[in-house]
Amino acid sequence: MKTIEELSQIMTDLVKSKGWFDEDTKRKQTPRNMACSLSIEAAEVLEHFQWSEEILHKDELASELADVFLYLLQLAKISEIDLEEAVLRKIEVNYGRTWDK
Image (cartoon, rainbow, N blue to C red; front, top):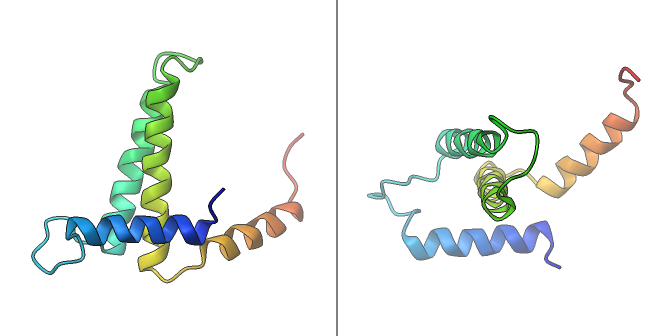
């Protein structure tokens, strides 16, 4: 199993290999672009449940979830956010919160 840091590095290596850090790229790795892409991919996850409560195409859903995760990793990386630390802090906050039962 890979750590978040290792997965983030693998994503960074992919981005470098595609030239997406280059000045003249059409796929600029900016926080805004990553946030937009993350939102678009999340909407594609939602499409799987547009007319059904069931998971009809598990492999396709898995692919869309992976896209969301990869954009999230990249957004955190270029924003200089330690995603693992942020997740652990948020879980701690959520333990102190109450929701309707």
